[in-house]
Image (cartoon, rainbow, N blue to C red; front, side, top):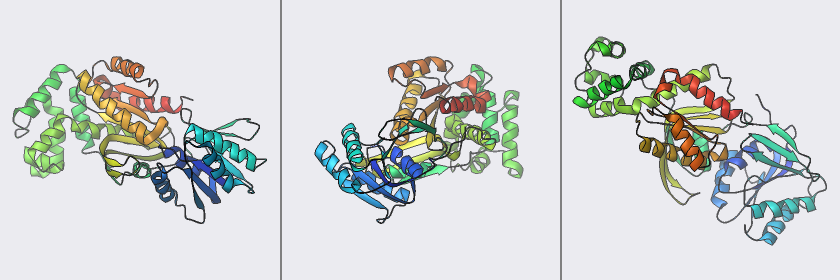
Length: 393
């Protein structure tokens, strides 16, 4: 379903700044026009987030005012908002962010300042903006494709200064051949592991069972001839040890990214904002006042909704669960309640892990676990997850 922003931007838009800046970023993109004046209602704790939002939204001092309040003090909130709202027409308040106390008393201040205010909030689960006036008659509008944001911009509004990502998979044909080989069963996965770890990829795999993979390797090396060193060079691996690491499991990230790219070519899933792999997020994050370092193995953003995919070839339940947990926490921190998480793993019983974590983490609908049997039809499996999450409403 295509979506469009609300028809009439407000003249004076008040936003309540909370610890997650994404709802305010989206609300400003949807509700603020070129002449809209934006009021960022924050506390001393969330003031760094305000500054990042101003930069991300391109707001200058002529179109933006910071409204500092004490977030637990009703009088401070009410009087702070009323001071800037009184006497103005075209008032709007989006109360998705901020604390409950801020929402209640900012709402009352806007009501007292205007006879015809506009109120709104973002429904994270349904990707809708909900609009109403004093009479509280609700109008819902799907906006999942109306606001765009990249992974770098998403990290930036959280105060994470450095993000490095890759938009192209490494040797997609080879990744497909490896996946096809390992999908044949436990014995083949064992053969693959034995070869990779025997002498660190110095010698190439031998035997008819490896023919399909060897054929792709030969094409990659071309006239140079197929050797471990030449293959490492072609894959951008400076040492055989890094080639070994890639063959031991890192290839899966490229395989997943290739599946995502296949989906985007005939994209009927929604507005594509960004995609890639190996997004390393690191640096001093002002919003959390500490150094952060984490990585999204593969990420896709449709509109402003983050789809984070964690990858491991392991079939160890504990390791799979840990990978999923890390991805789930980081995705929610950066992408908010809208974020969805998938684990692509070597698990032979992925449904069991999915049911367990959904129940224990109270995360029904937000998580998908795919196992080794899904590798052979990965684009379709990922599309089913993405489309189901988008149509949850």
